[in-house]
Amino acid sequence: MKREMKKSDDEREISAHYKLGLHGERLACDYLTNTGYKILHTRHRIEGIEIDIIALKDDTLVFVEVKTRRSDNLESPQDAVDIKKQHRMIRAANAYMQTSEQDVSIRFDIIAIVTNAHHSHIDHIEDAFSPFV
View 1: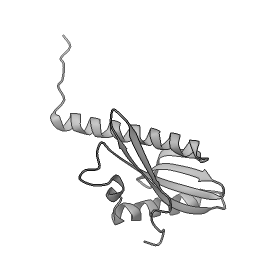
View 2: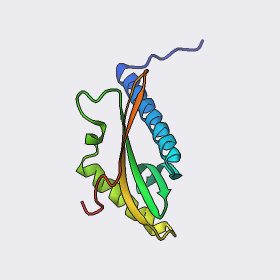
View 3: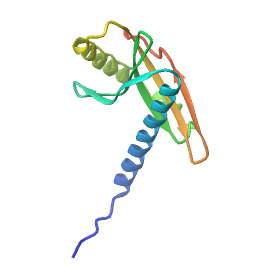
């Protein structure tokens, strides 16, 4: 007899939150591709830090943090990229560049997405923060 396990409310919330994040990352990749970026990596882990998207446009390597929300009533998605997250992204980018053979400039972008069943709004914030935070 197979026993069915019920998910707790916390597990359902994490699962829904995770799925929303994946959906946002797919939307962001499509947006970037359609605007001339070449996606090099998604969900790339470096020294225990995950970079959502690493993309190349012209001679610039872009490290992208994607933040997706169902609503921006309480907080804009980009507001979730605090100074701690910025430092972690910078550390990961430095590690990536040490192993990369690319001679390019780098940039840190945020893609903020508000999405629901009816539509999605994408806000691409180029050069969102400096690597010298």
